View 1 (cartoon, one colour):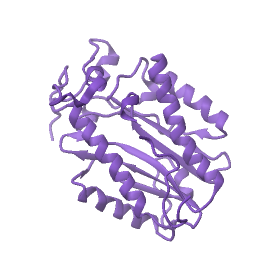
View 2 (tube, rainbow, N blue to C red; view 1 turned 30 degrees about the horizontal axis):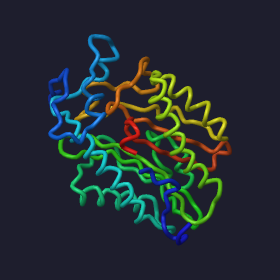
View 3 (cartoon, helix red, strand yellow; view 1 turned 135 degrees about the vertical axis):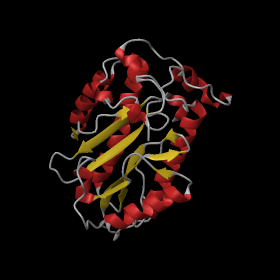
View 4 (spheres, rainbow, N blue to C red; view 1 turned 120 degrees about the vertical axis):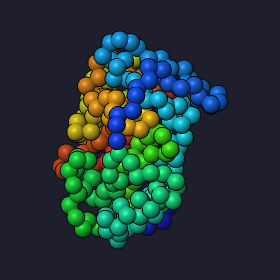
Length: 269
């Protein structure tokens, strides 16, 4: 590990409701690849396909750019988090990073959580005044908007040396990719993905928090289309439609770790 003062990611993976479009707009270039083909597969008229509709501004290139900018912002924020910071100051710093990157503070609060606050569900406010220790864990959870397109991402980081915290942060990201791999290999439902995630989390020695069950993502606002969770989705989720969320908790309730990203194939990792 590098300087103990530096945040280290345990793993680095390479108004009126708008009208709803049945078919996404075509990408402006070929950069969408396999995701472009998957994103255009919309099933009608069953409930699953209705849940996976997109808005009129949807674009493969736009969604990928929003994701790219989101992941870059997470890395930029993490580099500026240091032991001795108060959590509220880190949140304000993170907002500044997003604005400087040309991103809108969008559809859920910008979160940076330290230490014991990493256990809390996202809807539960942090205990105020928590200071990041010399050997500690934190996570970032942001949902910026780039032009018409929603970004959403999260990751956990450790400072100093704490083996169990580092393992938890590592395992949150590893479990994300294990679950994503099952989606790619077996084409199972969203419900089955979270059942699988729960089983693997237990084997790893962690508890999976089902208060973070995954959700839709699209051109803004996805909530005008579908507000249900991925964990309740009864069929195979499509690429570039869903955020897979993994929140692990220490069974002794000392800390947690979080990782989330868009469901995409291996080309994008």
